[in-house]
Length: 364
Image (tube, rainbow, N blue to C red):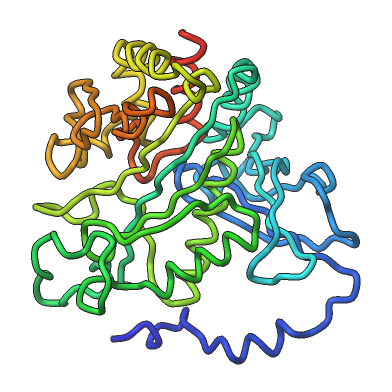
């Protein structure tokens, strides 16, 4: 069975006719939010009579939280507060993607609204100018849950030729990756690069550098765009940190981090100070680095397949088996950034960036 056999994979040439129709002065705004799982993305569209230029130009909205694992049916209204705005690469023109925070009926943040506390921490650390770059790994699947392009009755050859590979026998799904990259550029997402990963059908895109709260905003929109692009191709995206058991690499969201002092001459000293602070709060960070407080990462952080052990903290120069890696060029230059390799691919970037700044900058 091919992707075209599924009713969800329709002929896009038919859609193109309707998408070319003029919408006069109306603007379609796709409101996007995180559901009760902490990793699922939901969205719905609202028509405005004007083109919004900033999030505050978009009205607050609501939705049924009982259908998103966030409320009971007897009291189901949840509120959407726009917090970031991007160009819509699917509808184009004046139309927008609107990232929203979620609030409960009593206007308290939803349990999975991690952005609120992240923003507070970033505001406290504003003078330190915390920069982030996250390397988002993901895996493409067919509708049956099997990795896209893999033999249906077996496995591809062992890992080795796939990382940054070229060729139809080494990479699967490049069209999706290219379309996603271009769509992110159009939207205004700070996408920095992409590459094929170690496991076949696994890819990575990088977002950053972003300062403060922008890291989470841009990564969530990057994920949303990826899901939408893959939907058009009839392919499934999974952010599961260990989609295939056995001798296959898992998927992470390595977080590169620096402050102004780290980036300036003599910054290596400040990187080492930050690592020392991080070493004292390993458990706190593991709990923040996946939606299940470490349970998902247990399958990935085994000490094998370019990971550290979930039980122990470690650091080293150019060591991809450590919790924290100092890139060799950073050690040579004496300044730059550190790479935290522990966050899982399905992490909430707000939780990740918040806890890093909380520990390494605010020293709490």
